[in-house]
Length: 309
Image (cartoon, rainbow, N blue to C red):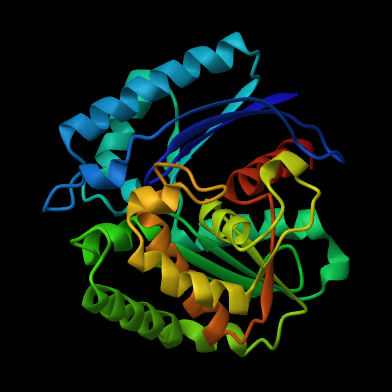
């Protein structure tokens, strides 16, 4: 069957169409996305602005037409931290449901972590043993660990790369003081919750997902995307620590000139590196393997389980 997945993220809204059936990996068939930066459309009262809602509705309407044109049988839609945390987020989603008939569900942070974990488990399989999965999004950081397809614990922290860049960096590049304060904040926040993870024991396999980790691995020497999803990509702690020091001293434009870094991701990569470095250090990880599957694939797999199970 052809399945459409509409991912309303804090930065990017993405429609992915896949051909999928039970017992086979989902095969991407078509992709359409736009950089709406919904988190930047939250006003001082944490309400999604009328402009932000207008942009989202226009994308959803386009996505519906594209999904129909491409033969999608089902459309699954979800929203992450920007809409979830908006004071009027549910009101916005209800108006979208009424106006477009698309039922966009706001995922909790824990659900994001669980679904991402499911995708990683399916990708690497049972031989990976206990997994520790870390995902850095635009608005939040998700961490999960477990032996099965459902993790023992799944947590979400407000440490997304885009959020931190907006809230903590006033200059480009940020000042040394801004960088120091952010580093201290990130480490304190992760350390506050680290016990929930480490009490389950040391992982057999530490895995990173998300664009942030993919780009950090690439600038640290991992294989480019042109080598395909099956190329093994590893991010080593020593390399990451070096880049977590370098990136805040570069401008967003300079970061975007690094291999594998996009122009729109360059500005937030420094904050992402600070979060990634803190997570690896506080969990005692020497390296993490980058997984090509993440939240969207987890949503697809869960839906297939529900349809065919």
